[in-house]
Length: 546
Ligand code: KIV
Ligand code: ZN
Image (cartoon, rainbow, N blue to C red; front, side):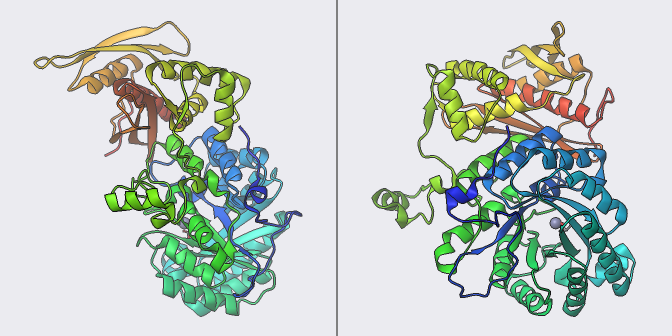
Protein backbone atom coordinates (compact mmCIF):
# COMPACT_ATOMS: atom_id res chain seq x y z
CA UNK A 1 0.00 0.00 0.00
CA UNK A 2 2.52 2.53 -1.11
CA UNK A 3 1.53 6.11 -1.65
CA UNK A 4 3.00 8.92 -3.62
CA UNK A 5 3.71 12.55 -2.94
CA UNK A 6 1.14 14.55 -4.84
CA UNK A 7 0.68 17.67 -2.84
CA UNK A 8 1.59 20.32 -5.35
CA UNK A 9 -1.05 19.31 -7.86
CA UNK A 10 -3.69 19.35 -5.15
CA UNK A 11 -2.72 22.49 -3.31
CA UNK A 12 -1.08 24.56 -5.99
CA UNK A 13 1.87 25.05 -3.65
CA UNK A 14 5.26 23.72 -4.57
CA UNK A 15 6.74 22.54 -1.27
CA UNK A 16 10.29 22.16 -2.42
CA UNK A 17 12.28 22.46 -5.54
CA UNK A 18 11.85 19.67 -8.05
CA UNK A 19 15.60 19.06 -8.05
CA UNK A 20 15.08 17.77 -4.53
CA UNK A 21 16.82 20.58 -2.68
CA UNK A 22 15.08 22.90 -0.30
CA UNK A 23 14.90 26.56 -1.06
CA UNK A 24 17.10 28.01 1.66
CA UNK A 25 15.85 31.39 2.68
CA UNK A 26 14.12 33.04 5.54
CA UNK A 27 12.24 35.37 3.31
CA UNK A 28 11.55 38.71 4.99
CA UNK A 29 8.02 39.48 6.07
CA UNK A 30 6.04 41.46 3.54
CA UNK A 31 7.16 39.38 0.58
CA UNK A 32 4.11 38.95 -1.63
CA UNK A 33 4.87 35.37 -2.69
CA UNK A 34 3.67 32.52 -0.49
CA UNK A 35 6.40 31.53 1.92
CA UNK A 36 6.71 27.80 2.40
CA UNK A 37 6.94 26.31 5.87
CA UNK A 38 8.32 22.78 5.79
CA UNK A 39 6.50 20.17 7.79
CA UNK A 40 8.87 17.78 9.54
CA UNK A 41 6.80 14.92 10.91
CA UNK A 42 8.16 13.11 13.95
CA UNK A 43 5.16 10.85 14.68
CA UNK A 44 7.37 7.81 14.11
CA UNK A 45 10.17 9.03 16.38
CA UNK A 46 9.13 11.46 19.14
CA UNK A 47 5.53 10.18 18.93
CA UNK A 48 6.28 6.49 18.74
CA UNK A 49 8.55 6.55 21.77
CA UNK A 50 5.73 7.73 24.07
CA UNK A 51 3.62 5.29 26.13
CA UNK A 52 0.96 3.39 24.19
CA UNK A 53 2.14 4.46 20.74
CA UNK A 54 4.66 1.77 19.87
CA UNK A 55 4.20 0.35 16.37
CA UNK A 56 5.66 -2.65 14.60
CA UNK A 57 7.57 -2.28 11.34
CA UNK A 58 4.60 -2.92 9.05
CA UNK A 59 2.52 -0.39 10.95
CA UNK A 60 5.33 2.17 10.64
CA UNK A 61 5.47 1.59 6.88
CA UNK A 62 1.72 2.12 6.59
CA UNK A 63 1.96 5.28 8.65
CA UNK A 64 4.95 6.62 6.67
CA UNK A 65 3.20 5.90 3.36
CA UNK A 66 0.19 7.87 4.54
CA UNK A 67 2.44 10.72 5.71
CA UNK A 68 3.88 10.86 2.18
CA UNK A 69 0.37 11.08 0.81
CA UNK A 70 -0.36 13.85 3.32
CA UNK A 71 2.48 15.82 1.75
CA UNK A 72 4.87 16.20 4.67
CA UNK A 73 8.32 17.42 3.64
CA UNK A 74 10.36 15.31 6.04
CA UNK A 75 9.56 12.06 7.86
CA UNK A 76 11.70 11.44 10.91
CA UNK A 77 11.45 7.67 10.68
CA UNK A 78 13.14 6.73 13.95
CA UNK A 79 16.29 6.60 16.06
CA UNK A 80 18.32 3.86 14.34
CA UNK A 81 20.86 3.29 17.14
CA UNK A 82 18.07 2.66 19.69
CA UNK A 83 17.47 -0.98 18.67
CA UNK A 84 17.80 -3.33 15.69
CA UNK A 85 14.02 -2.97 15.22
CA UNK A 86 14.30 0.83 15.00
CA UNK A 87 17.15 0.51 12.51
CA UNK A 88 15.17 -1.91 10.37
CA UNK A 89 12.08 0.31 10.42
CA UNK A 90 14.02 3.39 9.28
CA UNK A 91 15.77 1.39 6.58
CA UNK A 92 12.53 -0.08 5.24
CA UNK A 93 10.83 3.31 5.22
CA UNK A 94 13.87 4.73 3.38
CA UNK A 95 13.56 1.91 0.86
CA UNK A 96 9.81 1.86 0.35
CA UNK A 97 8.45 5.34 0.90
CA UNK A 98 9.03 7.91 -1.82
CA UNK A 99 8.49 11.66 -1.78
CA UNK A 100 9.49 13.14 1.57
CA UNK A 101 13.04 13.40 2.87
CA UNK A 102 13.66 10.47 5.26
CA UNK A 103 15.51 11.46 8.42
CA UNK A 104 17.17 9.35 11.10
CA UNK A 105 17.99 10.70 14.57
CA UNK A 106 21.50 10.42 16.07
CA UNK A 107 23.29 11.73 19.15
CA UNK A 108 26.58 13.54 18.49
CA UNK A 109 28.65 10.36 18.40
CA UNK A 110 30.23 8.79 15.35
CA UNK A 111 28.57 5.45 16.13
CA UNK A 112 25.06 6.95 16.24
CA UNK A 113 25.66 8.98 13.09
CA UNK A 114 26.98 5.99 11.12
CA UNK A 115 24.00 3.91 12.19
CA UNK A 116 21.59 6.67 11.11
CA UNK A 117 23.44 7.14 7.81
CA UNK A 118 23.27 3.40 7.07
CA UNK A 119 19.56 3.33 7.89
CA UNK A 120 18.56 6.26 5.63
CA UNK A 121 20.96 5.27 2.87
CA UNK A 122 18.33 3.75 0.48
CA UNK A 123 16.18 6.92 0.54
CA UNK A 124 15.91 9.13 -2.53
CA UNK A 125 16.51 12.09 -0.24
CA UNK A 126 18.01 11.48 3.18
CA UNK A 127 18.82 13.48 6.26
CA UNK A 128 20.75 12.92 9.46
CA UNK A 129 19.32 14.74 12.44
CA UNK A 130 21.97 14.98 15.14
CA UNK A 131 21.44 16.57 18.54
CA UNK A 132 23.19 17.66 21.70
CA UNK A 133 21.93 20.13 24.31
CA UNK A 134 22.01 23.89 24.76
CA UNK A 135 21.18 24.62 28.41
CA UNK A 136 23.60 24.56 31.33
CA UNK A 137 21.17 22.29 33.19
CA UNK A 138 21.57 19.65 30.48
CA UNK A 139 25.29 20.19 29.96
CA UNK A 140 26.13 19.98 33.66
CA UNK A 141 23.79 17.24 34.85
CA UNK A 142 23.17 15.09 31.80
CA UNK A 143 26.06 15.42 29.38
CA UNK A 144 28.62 16.48 32.03
CA UNK A 145 30.66 18.56 29.64
CA UNK A 146 31.56 22.24 29.38
CA UNK A 147 29.95 24.63 26.91
CA UNK A 148 33.17 24.69 24.86
CA UNK A 149 33.41 20.90 24.77
CA UNK A 150 29.79 20.71 23.62
CA UNK A 151 30.55 23.03 20.69
CA UNK A 152 33.65 21.02 19.80
CA UNK A 153 31.77 17.68 19.84
CA UNK A 154 28.73 19.06 18.03
CA UNK A 155 30.91 20.50 15.25
CA UNK A 156 32.78 17.21 14.93
CA UNK A 157 29.48 15.34 14.69
CA UNK A 158 28.12 17.65 12.00
CA UNK A 159 31.32 17.37 9.97
CA UNK A 160 31.09 13.59 10.20
CA UNK A 161 27.38 13.59 9.29
CA UNK A 162 28.15 15.78 6.25
CA UNK A 163 30.72 13.22 5.14
CA UNK A 164 27.81 10.72 4.93
CA UNK A 165 24.90 12.89 3.65
CA UNK A 166 24.31 16.32 2.15
CA UNK A 167 21.38 17.21 4.36
CA UNK A 168 22.20 17.56 8.07
CA UNK A 169 19.96 18.93 10.79
CA UNK A 170 21.33 19.95 14.17
CA UNK A 171 19.32 20.41 17.38
CA UNK A 172 20.36 21.56 20.84
CA UNK A 173 17.86 20.29 23.41
CA UNK A 174 16.34 22.65 25.95
CA UNK A 175 17.12 25.90 24.13
CA UNK A 176 14.33 27.75 25.92
CA UNK A 177 16.22 27.52 29.23
CA UNK A 178 19.62 28.21 27.67
CA UNK A 179 21.82 31.29 27.46
CA UNK A 180 20.95 33.02 24.16
CA UNK A 181 24.47 34.12 23.31
CA UNK A 182 25.78 30.62 23.91
CA UNK A 183 23.12 29.37 21.49
CA UNK A 184 24.33 31.90 18.90
CA UNK A 185 27.89 30.53 19.23
CA UNK A 186 26.80 26.89 19.16
CA UNK A 187 24.43 27.22 16.19
CA UNK A 188 26.88 29.41 14.23
CA UNK A 189 29.63 26.85 14.74
CA UNK A 190 27.52 23.89 13.55
CA UNK A 191 26.12 25.87 10.61
CA UNK A 192 29.65 26.79 9.51
CA UNK A 193 30.57 23.11 9.88
CA UNK A 194 27.85 22.17 7.37
CA UNK A 195 24.49 21.82 9.16
CA UNK A 196 21.75 22.80 6.71
CA UNK A 197 18.82 23.00 9.14
CA UNK A 198 19.10 24.46 12.64
CA UNK A 199 16.36 23.15 14.90
CA UNK A 200 15.52 25.05 18.09
CA UNK A 201 13.64 22.70 20.45
CA UNK A 202 11.51 23.68 23.39
CA UNK A 203 12.25 20.26 24.83
CA UNK A 204 10.45 20.77 28.12
CA UNK A 205 7.48 22.79 26.83
CA UNK A 206 8.49 25.77 28.95
CA UNK A 207 8.34 28.77 26.67
CA UNK A 208 5.47 31.12 25.76
CA UNK A 209 4.65 32.58 22.34
CA UNK A 210 6.03 36.11 22.85
CA UNK A 211 9.21 34.79 24.44
CA UNK A 212 9.80 32.11 21.78
CA UNK A 213 9.20 34.59 18.98
CA UNK A 214 11.89 36.80 20.49
CA UNK A 215 14.32 33.88 20.84
CA UNK A 216 13.88 32.80 17.22
CA UNK A 217 14.19 36.39 15.97
CA UNK A 218 17.36 36.78 18.07
CA UNK A 219 18.94 33.68 16.52
CA UNK A 220 17.77 34.44 12.96
CA UNK A 221 19.35 37.89 13.24
CA UNK A 222 22.67 36.64 14.61
CA UNK A 223 23.37 33.20 13.12
CA UNK A 224 24.27 34.63 9.75
CA UNK A 225 25.26 31.60 7.72
CA UNK A 226 23.78 31.70 4.19
CA UNK A 227 21.30 29.06 3.15
CA UNK A 228 20.28 27.91 6.62
CA UNK A 229 16.69 26.88 7.42
CA UNK A 230 15.54 27.57 10.98
CA UNK A 231 13.27 24.95 12.49
CA UNK A 232 11.35 24.59 15.75
CA UNK A 233 10.30 21.58 17.81
CA UNK A 234 7.84 22.43 20.58
CA UNK A 235 6.51 20.22 23.34
CA UNK A 236 3.08 20.76 24.78
CA UNK A 237 3.57 20.71 28.56
CA UNK A 238 1.71 24.02 28.96
CA UNK A 239 -0.62 23.38 26.02
CA UNK A 240 1.31 25.99 23.99
CA UNK A 241 3.16 23.88 21.42
CA UNK A 242 1.10 25.03 18.42
CA UNK A 243 0.99 28.67 19.57
CA UNK A 244 4.75 28.66 20.17
CA UNK A 245 5.42 27.13 16.75
CA UNK A 246 3.23 29.76 15.08
CA UNK A 247 5.10 32.51 16.93
CA UNK A 248 8.38 31.04 15.69
CA UNK A 249 7.11 31.09 12.12
CA UNK A 250 6.35 34.81 12.55
CA UNK A 251 9.99 35.27 13.55
CA UNK A 252 11.36 33.45 10.49
CA UNK A 253 11.32 29.70 11.28
CA UNK A 254 10.62 27.84 8.05
CA UNK A 255 10.38 24.30 9.34
CA UNK A 256 8.00 23.08 12.05
CA UNK A 257 8.43 19.70 13.72
CA UNK A 258 5.15 18.12 14.68
CA UNK A 259 3.18 14.89 15.03
CA UNK A 260 -0.18 13.52 14.00
CA UNK A 261 -2.77 14.02 16.76
CA UNK A 262 -0.03 15.87 18.70
CA UNK A 263 1.41 12.64 20.16
CA UNK A 264 4.88 12.65 21.72
CA UNK A 265 6.87 12.70 24.94
CA UNK A 266 4.79 13.62 28.04
CA UNK A 267 2.05 16.06 26.91
CA UNK A 268 3.07 15.55 23.28
CA UNK A 269 4.41 17.67 20.45
CA UNK A 270 2.97 20.41 18.27
CA UNK A 271 0.00 18.83 16.48
CA UNK A 272 0.51 18.61 12.72
CA UNK A 273 -3.15 19.03 11.83
CA UNK A 274 -3.50 22.12 14.03
CA UNK A 275 -0.39 23.95 12.84
CA UNK A 276 -1.09 23.06 9.20
CA UNK A 277 -4.68 24.30 9.36
CA UNK A 278 -3.77 27.40 11.40
CA UNK A 279 -1.36 28.34 8.62
CA UNK A 280 -3.78 27.33 5.84
CA UNK A 281 -6.79 29.24 7.20
CA UNK A 282 -4.69 32.42 7.39
CA UNK A 283 -2.52 31.77 4.32
CA UNK A 284 -4.09 34.48 2.17
CA UNK A 285 -3.41 37.25 4.62
CA UNK A 286 -0.07 36.01 5.95
CA UNK A 287 1.40 34.75 2.67
CA UNK A 288 2.70 31.74 4.59
CA UNK A 289 1.58 28.14 4.02
CA UNK A 290 2.68 24.51 4.03
CA UNK A 291 2.48 21.85 1.32
CA UNK A 292 0.13 19.70 3.40
CA UNK A 293 -2.69 18.06 1.41
CA UNK A 294 -5.29 19.00 3.97
CA UNK A 295 -7.88 16.56 2.62
CA UNK A 296 -5.62 13.72 3.82
CA UNK A 297 -5.58 14.94 7.44
CA UNK A 298 -8.59 12.95 8.63
CA UNK A 299 -7.40 9.66 7.07
CA UNK A 300 -3.96 10.10 8.61
CA UNK A 301 -5.30 10.85 12.07
CA UNK A 302 -7.70 7.94 11.84
CA UNK A 303 -4.95 5.57 10.65
CA UNK A 304 -2.85 6.46 13.69
CA UNK A 305 -5.71 5.90 16.14
CA UNK A 306 -6.61 2.61 14.53
CA UNK A 307 -3.00 1.36 14.61
CA UNK A 308 -2.32 2.41 18.18
CA UNK A 309 -5.80 2.10 19.63
CA UNK A 310 -5.38 5.46 21.35
CA UNK A 311 -8.33 7.71 20.51
CA UNK A 312 -8.25 11.51 20.33
CA UNK A 313 -10.36 13.54 22.72
CA UNK A 314 -13.79 14.42 21.22
CA UNK A 315 -13.18 18.17 21.41
CA UNK A 316 -9.70 18.02 19.84
CA UNK A 317 -9.31 20.69 17.14
CA UNK A 318 -9.56 19.48 13.51
CA UNK A 319 -9.73 15.72 14.18
CA UNK A 320 -11.90 15.35 17.31
CA UNK A 321 -15.35 13.78 16.90
CA UNK A 322 -17.01 17.11 17.80
CA UNK A 323 -14.66 19.43 15.91
CA UNK A 324 -17.32 20.18 13.27
CA UNK A 325 -20.46 19.29 15.24
CA UNK A 326 -22.82 22.19 15.89
CA UNK A 327 -24.97 21.37 18.90
CA UNK A 328 -26.61 24.57 20.07
CA UNK A 329 -29.78 25.70 18.31
CA UNK A 330 -28.41 29.12 17.45
CA UNK A 331 -25.29 27.61 15.89
CA UNK A 332 -27.27 25.00 13.95
CA UNK A 333 -29.60 27.67 12.64
CA UNK A 334 -26.69 29.83 11.53
CA UNK A 335 -24.85 26.98 9.81
CA UNK A 336 -28.00 25.90 7.96
CA UNK A 337 -28.41 29.44 6.65
CA UNK A 338 -24.76 29.92 5.75
CA UNK A 339 -21.95 27.61 6.84
CA UNK A 340 -19.54 30.52 7.20
CA UNK A 341 -21.53 31.82 10.19
CA UNK A 342 -19.89 29.31 12.52
CA UNK A 343 -17.35 27.47 10.34
CA UNK A 344 -13.88 28.86 9.63
CA UNK A 345 -13.04 25.82 7.49
CA UNK A 346 -15.16 23.02 6.08
CA UNK A 347 -15.01 19.41 7.30
CA UNK A 348 -14.34 18.44 3.67
CA UNK A 349 -11.18 20.58 3.62
CA UNK A 350 -9.63 18.24 6.20
CA UNK A 351 -10.99 15.11 4.52
CA UNK A 352 -14.06 14.57 6.69
CA UNK A 353 -16.80 13.76 4.25
CA UNK A 354 -20.33 14.86 5.06
CA UNK A 355 -21.83 12.19 2.84
CA UNK A 356 -22.26 9.30 5.21
CA UNK A 357 -23.55 6.10 3.72
CA UNK A 358 -21.10 4.67 1.26
CA UNK A 359 -21.83 1.02 0.73
CA UNK A 360 -24.37 -1.64 1.61
CA UNK A 361 -24.76 -5.38 1.27
CA UNK A 362 -25.53 -5.22 -2.46
CA UNK A 363 -22.33 -3.35 -3.28
CA UNK A 364 -19.79 -5.26 -5.33
CA UNK A 365 -16.03 -5.61 -5.12
CA UNK A 366 -15.44 -2.80 -7.65
CA UNK A 367 -17.46 -0.34 -5.59
CA UNK A 368 -15.50 -1.37 -2.51
CA UNK A 369 -12.16 -0.98 -4.33
CA UNK A 370 -13.23 2.48 -5.61
CA UNK A 371 -14.21 3.64 -2.14
CA UNK A 372 -11.02 2.26 -0.60
CA UNK A 373 -9.01 4.06 -3.23
CA UNK A 374 -10.83 7.32 -2.47
CA UNK A 375 -9.93 6.77 1.17
CA UNK A 376 -6.28 6.35 0.21
CA UNK A 377 -5.92 2.57 0.35
CA UNK A 378 -4.52 0.48 -2.45
CA UNK A 379 -4.86 -3.12 -1.28
CA UNK A 380 -3.30 -5.97 -3.19
CA UNK A 381 -5.70 -8.39 -4.93
CA UNK A 382 -5.40 -10.86 -2.03
CA UNK A 383 -5.97 -8.15 0.57
CA UNK A 384 -8.95 -6.81 -1.39
CA UNK A 385 -10.52 -10.27 -1.52
CA UNK A 386 -10.08 -10.71 2.24
CA UNK A 387 -11.44 -7.21 2.95
CA UNK A 388 -14.38 -7.89 0.64
CA UNK A 389 -15.26 -11.11 2.53
CA UNK A 390 -15.20 -9.22 5.82
CA UNK A 391 -17.18 -6.37 4.28
CA UNK A 392 -19.95 -8.78 3.22
CA UNK A 393 -20.18 -10.22 6.73
CA UNK A 394 -20.33 -6.71 8.19
CA UNK A 395 -22.86 -5.48 5.62
CA UNK A 396 -25.11 -8.37 6.62
CA UNK A 397 -25.03 -7.18 10.22
CA UNK A 398 -25.24 -3.43 9.51
CA UNK A 399 -27.59 -1.55 7.23
CA UNK A 400 -24.99 0.99 6.22
CA UNK A 401 -21.24 0.62 6.01
CA UNK A 402 -19.49 3.94 6.64
CA UNK A 403 -16.00 5.10 5.68
CA UNK A 404 -14.91 4.61 9.29
CA UNK A 405 -16.05 0.97 9.12
CA UNK A 406 -13.99 0.46 5.98
CA UNK A 407 -10.88 1.99 7.56
CA UNK A 408 -11.38 -0.41 10.49
CA UNK A 409 -11.67 -3.40 8.13
CA UNK A 410 -8.50 -2.38 6.32
CA UNK A 411 -6.65 -1.97 9.62
CA UNK A 412 -7.75 -5.42 10.70
CA UNK A 413 -6.71 -7.02 7.43
CA UNK A 414 -3.31 -5.38 7.33
CA UNK A 415 -2.44 -5.98 10.99
CA UNK A 416 0.60 -8.21 10.84
CA UNK A 417 0.22 -11.70 12.17
CA UNK A 418 2.99 -12.89 14.42
CA UNK A 419 3.66 -16.49 13.47
CA UNK A 420 3.80 -18.76 16.49
CA UNK A 421 1.25 -16.85 18.48
CA UNK A 422 -1.45 -16.32 15.92
CA UNK A 423 -4.48 -17.13 18.03
CA UNK A 424 -7.73 -16.37 16.24
CA UNK A 425 -11.24 -16.35 17.67
CA UNK A 426 -13.44 -19.01 16.08
CA UNK A 427 -16.55 -18.56 18.23
CA UNK A 428 -17.75 -17.85 21.72
CA UNK A 429 -20.93 -18.12 23.75
CA UNK A 430 -21.82 -16.75 27.15
CA UNK A 431 -24.49 -17.93 29.55
CA UNK A 432 -25.38 -15.31 32.11
CA UNK A 433 -28.24 -14.72 34.51
CA UNK A 434 -28.94 -12.27 37.31
CA UNK A 435 -27.93 -14.76 40.07
CA UNK A 436 -24.97 -16.79 38.79
CA UNK A 437 -21.61 -15.53 37.49
CA UNK A 438 -21.51 -15.52 33.67
CA UNK A 439 -19.88 -18.54 32.08
CA UNK A 440 -18.19 -18.39 28.68
CA UNK A 441 -17.19 -21.05 26.22
CA UNK A 442 -14.51 -19.89 23.78
CA UNK A 443 -13.15 -21.65 20.71
CA UNK A 444 -9.77 -20.54 19.34
CA UNK A 445 -7.55 -21.68 16.52
CA UNK A 446 -3.76 -21.27 16.61
CA UNK A 447 -1.67 -21.00 13.43
CA UNK A 448 -4.36 -22.73 11.36
CA UNK A 449 -4.36 -25.85 13.55
CA UNK A 450 -7.46 -27.66 14.86
CA UNK A 451 -9.70 -25.51 17.06
CA UNK A 452 -9.52 -25.83 20.84
CA UNK A 453 -12.20 -24.92 23.38
CA UNK A 454 -12.31 -23.91 27.04
CA UNK A 455 -14.88 -22.76 29.56
CA UNK A 456 -14.44 -20.16 32.30
CA UNK A 457 -16.50 -17.88 34.47
CA UNK A 458 -15.90 -14.24 35.35
CA UNK A 459 -17.32 -11.08 36.90
CA UNK A 460 -19.05 -10.17 33.67
CA UNK A 461 -19.35 -11.61 30.15
CA UNK A 462 -16.14 -9.92 28.92
CA UNK A 463 -14.24 -11.06 31.98
CA UNK A 464 -15.46 -14.64 31.48
CA UNK A 465 -14.42 -14.67 27.81
CA UNK A 466 -10.96 -13.29 28.63
CA UNK A 467 -10.56 -15.89 31.38
CA UNK A 468 -11.29 -18.66 28.85
CA UNK A 469 -8.76 -17.11 26.44
CA UNK A 470 -6.12 -17.09 29.21
CA UNK A 471 -6.90 -20.73 29.88
CA UNK A 472 -6.47 -21.68 26.21
CA UNK A 473 -3.42 -19.59 25.36
CA UNK A 474 -1.54 -19.87 28.64
CA UNK A 475 -1.00 -16.11 28.37
CA UNK A 476 -2.01 -13.98 31.32
CA UNK A 477 -1.72 -10.29 30.63
CA UNK A 478 -3.18 -7.94 33.22
CA UNK A 479 -4.91 -5.16 31.34
CA UNK A 480 -4.24 -1.59 32.51
CA UNK A 481 -6.79 0.18 30.36
CA UNK A 482 -9.89 -0.99 28.51
CA UNK A 483 -11.57 1.46 26.16
CA UNK A 484 -14.68 0.93 24.11
CA UNK A 485 -15.95 3.31 21.50
CA UNK A 486 -18.44 3.16 18.67
CA UNK A 487 -16.79 3.59 15.27
CA UNK A 488 -19.97 5.10 13.80
CA UNK A 489 -23.42 6.03 15.13
CA UNK A 490 -26.50 3.85 15.60
CA UNK A 491 -27.25 0.77 17.68
CA UNK A 492 -25.81 -1.46 14.94
CA UNK A 493 -22.49 0.44 15.03
CA UNK A 494 -19.22 -1.44 15.18
CA UNK A 495 -17.55 -1.17 18.56
CA UNK A 496 -13.80 -0.70 18.75
CA UNK A 497 -12.12 -2.02 21.88
CA UNK A 498 -8.58 -1.02 22.77
CA UNK A 499 -6.78 -2.70 25.64
CA UNK A 500 -3.34 -1.80 26.93
CA UNK A 501 -0.82 -3.29 29.32
CA UNK A 502 2.64 -2.32 30.51
CA UNK A 503 5.06 -5.07 29.60
CA UNK A 504 8.85 -5.09 29.54
CA UNK A 505 9.03 -1.34 30.13
CA UNK A 506 6.68 -0.49 27.24
CA UNK A 507 2.96 0.12 26.99
CA UNK A 508 1.50 -2.23 24.40
CA UNK A 509 -1.99 -2.05 22.94
CA UNK A 510 -4.32 -4.39 21.11
CA UNK A 511 -7.50 -3.52 19.24
CA UNK A 512 -10.52 -5.46 18.13
CA UNK A 513 -13.61 -4.45 16.20
CA UNK A 514 -17.03 -5.99 15.83
CA UNK A 515 -20.71 -5.12 16.00
CA UNK A 516 -20.63 -7.30 19.13
CA UNK A 517 -18.60 -5.74 21.95
CA UNK A 518 -17.76 -9.05 23.65
CA UNK A 519 -16.29 -10.31 20.39
CA UNK A 520 -14.44 -6.98 19.91
CA UNK A 521 -13.00 -7.39 23.44
CA UNK A 522 -11.83 -10.95 22.73
CA UNK A 523 -10.18 -9.83 19.48
CA UNK A 524 -8.46 -6.93 21.25
CA UNK A 525 -7.05 -9.25 23.91
CA UNK A 526 -5.78 -11.69 21.27
CA UNK A 527 -4.18 -8.76 19.39
CA UNK A 528 -2.43 -7.76 22.63
CA UNK A 529 -1.10 -11.31 23.02
CA UNK A 530 0.23 -11.22 19.43
CA UNK A 531 1.87 -7.87 20.01
CA UNK A 532 3.49 -9.02 23.24
CA UNK A 533 4.85 -12.07 21.40
CA UNK A 534 6.14 -9.84 18.60
CA UNK A 535 7.99 -7.80 21.18
CA UNK A 536 9.65 -11.00 22.41
CA UNK A 537 7.74 -11.09 25.67
CA UNK A 538 7.20 -14.76 25.20
CA UNK A 539 7.02 -15.93 28.82
CA UNK A 540 4.11 -18.21 29.38
CA UNK A 541 2.73 -15.84 31.94
CA UNK A 542 3.10 -12.15 31.17
CA UNK A 543 2.18 -10.11 34.20
CA UNK A 544 2.00 -6.41 33.65
CA UNK A 545 4.21 -4.13 35.69
CA UNK A 546 2.96 -2.20 38.69
O1 KIV B 1 12.42 17.46 22.38
C1 KIV B 1 13.57 17.45 21.88
O2 KIV B 1 14.43 18.27 22.21
C2 KIV B 1 13.87 16.44 20.88
C3 KIV B 1 15.16 16.59 20.14
C4 KIV B 1 15.82 15.29 19.88
C5 KIV B 1 14.92 17.37 18.89
O3 KIV B 1 13.05 15.57 20.63
ZN1 ZN C 1 11.00 16.18 21.35
